[in-house]
Amino acid sequence: MTHLLEVKNLDIFFKNNEGKKDFHVVRHVGFNLRPGEVLGIVGESGSGKSLTALSLLGLLPYPKAYHSKKTSIKFKGEELIDNPALRHIRGGKIGFVFQEPMSSLNPLHTVEQQIAEAIMIHQNISRTKARHEVLRLLKQTGIQNPRARLKAYPHQLSGGQRQRVMIAMAIANRPDILIADEPTTALDVTVQKQIIELLLKLRHELDMSLIFISHDLHLIHRIADNVLVMHHGMIIERGNCAKIFNHPENSYTKRLISSRNILKNNTNITSDIILKAQEISVRFPLIKNFWGNVKQYLYAVNKLSFTLHKGQTLGIVGESGSGKTTLGLAVCNLISFTGKIILNGRQTDDYPNRQLRKELQIVFQDPYNSLNPRMTIRQIVGEGLEVHYPRLTTEEKSHRIETALKDVGLSPAALNKYPHEFSGGQRQRIAIARALILDPKIIVLDEPTSALDVTIQRQIINLLLRLQQQRQLSYIFISHDINAVRAVSDQIMVMKDGLIVECGPTAQILAQPKQQYTQNLIGASAFVS
Image (cartoon, rainbow, N blue to C red; front, side, top):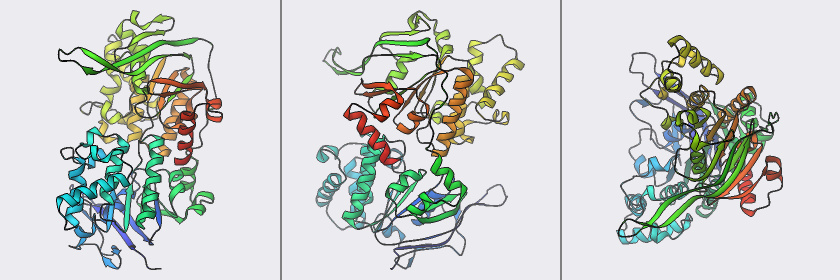
């Protein structure tokens, strides 16, 4: 069978401006893609999988990036390296769906403008005909009420809707190959399932091949015919999906497969109730009249009550917009709410603000945005000591900071570095160290493993479980990832539209969910993992 795409001896180098040896980031990668085939490329961050995909369409930062003379990338027998005709193939014969649509969509252009541009560059049609084609594409990719979305800007769409717009742009010219680079990262499991099903449907409707890139081998197993496993810029294992998944040969591949199999075994829960929430509500103004008086509110959290025991983990799950993060912020007294939160038998309204912050810490979803880029790790982790323990000597503060870093598995050598010098998993460890240094009783963890590689997720979860055992911490673990919640939680609370849909022990909720919404969440999680 004739191959659509042939890649041979793909080497990617980045020039080193310091006069040292150039960085060889992708080494001797080669593969073929047949018509109609789904090829999965899997590996952790830094494995070279996205660089490999970008090089297929000449999207690397040339000339800072360059290839070896042996590198060859052929599409239907035509060499693409240094080919001026590549601009006609890019977006025409080969489409690309990028990982983060909010970053790759132009924030100043409407949905119609962005999709129409992709069409009019490759097809000689009028703007009126392009609009009809945009409407057809939006409908084909499952956008509800597509005509109303034509004038919408990216920030006015949800994550799933933005990803559908990206897919509409990528398939606008009926490509022979669609490259999807981590298209479901950080999306809710139900939206992930919808995007995967959409890509597979389009593959059959348009009779195209698909290159699907992911850090999650379990997800690749669901959709791919053949798999390439990449590590440190090289292909370390390849084969059909069933063979790779059921009989992996490389230890790294085995680690990727087992990274999802985490179950919480040890419990150190006491009968002492450390936190009790009563009738918690959070509302935001929705409609105001001419004089600015609020006529209608949106209830993000609506009269929720729950208890948390010492040493216990309460997992809060639900789709984006369900109110779970808002509830976490209310518990930490970071937003206004009505109702009562009782910590250690005392209402939080009666706590001095500093004491409350010391007892109840939060780890945010994105450590890159929550860590000050202008502060060193020493300053970030030790900032709480300056506020809560001002009488400590410099030596005592340094000792506490180093101990906190060691507790989360980081070397004291990191102290004088800045957040941008660390990986996502390392930054999350720094955020956890910042919370731990004040010796809190409760930590609210808001999507702490979102968008991390599955192996890094496992490391963070194991770290949280170890710290909980050592310090008898209580966690409120917020996530849309059922697998992560299963691994750490003793109790699960399912949220939808600001309400508790279902609540109970983890094993009971996951094995015998009573509500259809919970069943859908668990089913979608099983599909994408």
